[in-house]
Amino acid sequence: MTVDVAVTGIGLVTPAGIGVDRAWQGVLSGRSAGAKDPNLAGIPIDISCRVADFDGNEMLGRKAARRLDRFVQLGLVAAREAVTDSGLDPQTWDGARVGAVIGCGMGGAGTWEAQHTVLMERGPERVSPMLIPMLIPNMVAGHIAIEFHANGPNLVTATACTSGATAIGVARDLLRSGACDVVITGGTEAGLTPLSIAAFGQMHALSGRVDDPGAASRPFDADRDGFVAAEAAGMLVIERADDATARGARVRGRLLGYGASADAHHITAPDPEGVGVGLAIQAALRDAGVGPADVGHINAHGTSTPLNDAAESRVIRRIFGDDAPPVTSTKGVTGHSLGAAGAIEAAFSLLTIEDGLLPPTANLEKQDPEIDLDVVSGEPRKTDAEIVMSNSFGFGGQNGVLVLARA
Amino acid sequence: MSAVYDKVKQLLVDKFGVPEDEISPTATFTDLDLDSLDLVEFALAAEEELGVRITDEEAEQLDTLDDTVKLLEQKGATVEGAG
Image (cartoon, rainbow over all chains, first blue to last red; front, top):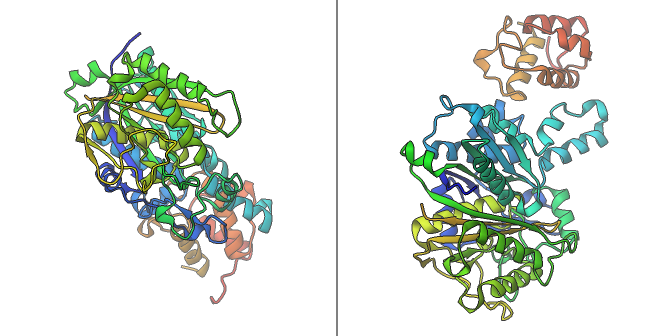
């Protein structure tokens, strides 16, 4: 069943800025948010892209914030902006018809680590009874349900760095199947903790450019050496286009297609042939009812790891050929926000179309000669793209590709 | 009010984010929007700050702050530097 799906609300909390306007201006600036992270002092890779100005106590109230892990705090603030932007009123909507599908890779890593220290240093009787409700990744969808009276289907998707894209795809299916009339969807992540960053470091997944953190995330550059871990949340409100039109909503774009696949290759390394990635891209194009030539821009997964960017560019070349559209990785600015990445990049893709500007890839100084693509760098570039593709690939080999279009 | 009451009030404000003007001796934990998980945390915090243990059974019975302070005082709660 084909159902036209409208995006009527966007919310963003990112290292490039809090709120859609500031985040988007930050992305267009091409300045990386990479910086030394005092919370990672003593860890070999002590840099990250943090949402520096985010104070959960201030934005949510101290009483509420103390019971929420940071990944839920970021997610709730982004969801509030998206719901407000949609013009829908949670006080009057039929909550049974409203779902929430949110992506998250790690859950409450910070709470887990802090309470493990309590266990080791002070014993089991000092462990907080709030640990489990703050840790479990599905709690972000639970809190969104409580805050917005959303009694419909409610879940969290965990496909590592694809989680946000997976969530939006699953949310779209809830509209198609008729299970929901409105879905709040997106992704959130706040895993910048000493243990998780030490572990990513041990995998050699992170950039070692600790003395020049602003230059560390450099997708498609010849000197890239890994990703910079980030925290973020991105939320969308989606509904059937007919419903949105009928209520006179401001439609910010359409969700035209979604494709998913698995590499079935290796736990963390991308398949160098990109078979799985190719399947997801083809599936998304087929689902959207468009061909490669219709796509005006690709917001790449582009993590800045040597393996990902090379493999991704090969697949794009294979499918799009010599006429591949211009490509950007906004992770140069934001870093890699894992389970939130697919969601914030879907939002950036919509803003690209709305604003007619392709954001530049930060820190692209000398493009890797093996990457035979038109990568946008330096300044934002004007575009009349009507359709943008957003790629996400996760550890575990899960791939998710979204196709977004002008309203 | 007693030093123990003042300590309880300070705990509720500092640790639980309860607005100070909502706190009074007759206020119940329910009035302050604190649930059963908060009560378990409150018992942990009270043990640390006041040196007395509130059992789970006692925590479930806690009603007003006045009752809570009385229970803590019966158990020998003391506040350093007070009285």
